Image (cartoon, rainbow, N blue to C red; front, side, top):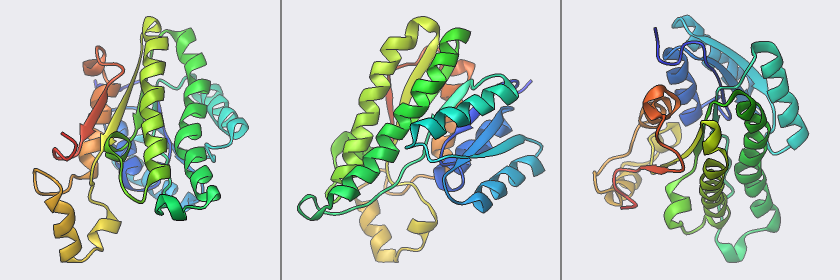
Length: 248
């Protein structure tokens, strides 16, 4: 029996990158995975097809998680259809980078609305069902930017630092109900965007990383799966940095 057999997982922002890798890994471990997306249905369908072609189970669900009522409806639909959300992975996020003195208020607000409030929205709705069931796993994808700051990302760093604060608070509130809440803070992870960089740009990034190279999306997905399974049952309220030693 696979370690997540019989579990239902919701992964937000799962149409590409880290979110897609997480969805594929949870499905490979036996979970039924709901692939949430905000705009690109084709990307979400592609991830779902790959999961199904490999013998897994996946469904797609559209929702802008910054909208509370839409988020509530999405989660209620999942529970109505499949009975539970056993695992919630808050991965959806956006960036609108700029130096603080040049940042427009709407750039700040948009990032906070998706990255921070969106994570709150999903956690609040899902937690009510997890508390009744007295079981659940919540894994929030933060960032080393939220741990150590990053020039040009005051909105993003604030949102990801806020996610860490919410993670620790929710972990304290729900531990007595056998619900674990943890955060993962990725550093530089190799994606299509970083692959398109020049060799000089890649070398500059690698110079910031003690291990000397960027991580892979699977590095994040493997930790999510660990925290979601029985092996992670005694871990809660933690921020696990997967960054090659960048923030040590």
